[in-house]
Length: 245
Image (cartoon, rainbow, N blue to C red; front, side):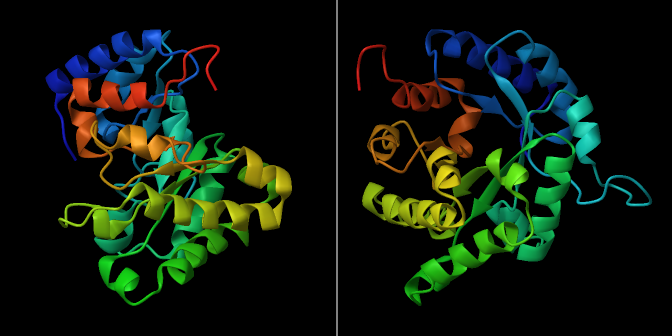
């Protein structure tokens, strides 16, 4: 919940200009709902895709304050973030509600970015695998193959966001591999094609190490995305020049 008309215009403009030299790196901006029309106009005709931070599981009706997938699609959204740690832990969204939103997003033609991750208490209790897989399985159990084939998964270790704790690239890789194994168990093609992003305080200083991990396909960027220079440095960490492995 950051930004204004002025800051959104400046940030989106800088990002659109900065990614022009990064072919092959898919970049999306997910501003608050009220800034979607402005940012949508600014990214139109550029490689940058538009996304939203959340949506309702309902298509329409008496749900004051909610925003539907069809509304987001009409604004030009390509992605929508679902089950973000703050939605789960501050606003109490259950695995089942996130799964319902996932289906609604898919039905609206949006690409769901499904967030999963454990708290510091859960990690210390050795519950990382159980928590992450339960969050993932809630969606796998209810979504069809078509919906799953177009999704993105983002691992957010809640314990590494604003706590002073830091996830190492190896810790990130361990959970990313776990997620990919679960997807592969559902379908080999699904496991191979699904992008698994890392969302635990990615910064310019640690982005390259994280992106070098075999199962880390990109990043879901929080605070660093509010500074165009920092965000573009992270995008550059995902860029492999033509001819290099």
